[in-house]
Amino acid sequence: MKIRIKLLAHYQQYLPPDCSSSSYETEVPPDARVEDVLAGLPVPLEESVVLVNGRTPQPGQVLREGDVLCLFPAIGGG
Image 1 (tube, rainbow, N blue to C red):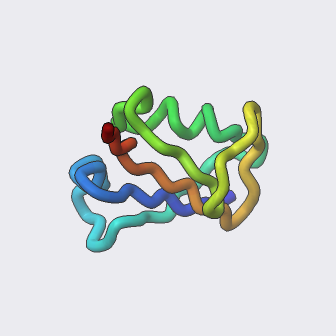
Image 2: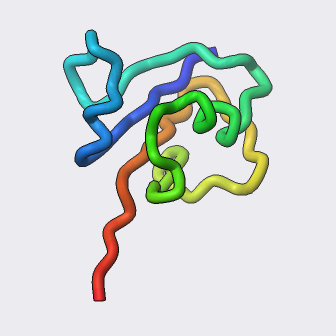
């Protein structure tokens, strides 16, 4: 099944070389969980905000056809 991965801010450096926008479509197994897809990305996950279709995913959430997995760096402040 196909999902879209969107990388924002300086995470765009991790986009595939042939990508001309901030997102790309990829094929994943039908039972792929958010964690499964994240494990295959070269993004620093411990510093990331992760959203699926604009919402925080539940632990173990299974992705569905057409979902958008968005990652961007967490911004700290004080």
